[in-house]
Amino acid sequence: IMEIKELEFVAGKWKGKGTAEVNSVKGADYDEETIFEFEKEKQLIFYIQRTWRTVDRKRIEMLHFESGFIRKNDAGIIQLSNSQGNGRVEVMELEEVSINGKNAVLLFVSRSHGNDPRMIETTRQFTINGSKMKYEMKMATVMNDKLTGHLRAELEKGQA
Image 1 (spheres, helix red, strand yellow):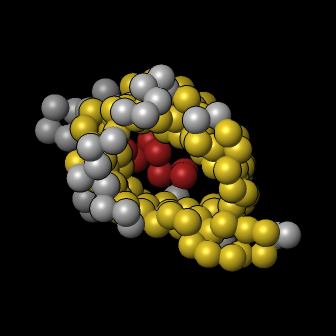
Image 2: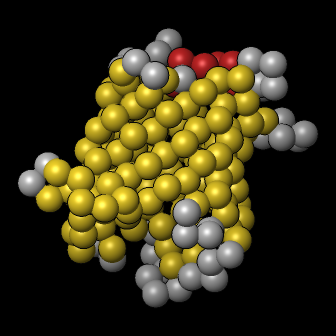
């Protein structure tokens, strides 16, 4: 059974660029900053994620803001739960994991959404290679019920 401390290596401040898509149509390029903090006493990871729409590499407006936790529930399942600036809440479970040192692939799949009746399913995959992370979020909604790409980002770990 996996323990949260096995994910401690993700702790830190990650920055980079991404692209948002809606129904496979490219939307906005964005800057992203995500901070993961490992809490040893509680055996959980707190995170905060912010994205900004960019034009000519300049931040124009905040696009998305969320925070949440990666924790192990009472049944021993690793969960990612969050609350988003648009009011949506989400609980995901770690469905696939592969860890080798500071390299990992983590796939979280949604189990519940709240406060947003449009949502059917989401996935978030983190592919980490040392100080580089690729992040992909897919979603299915009542308007497009097939799980399709929504966000893609490449981040680099710096100093928190």
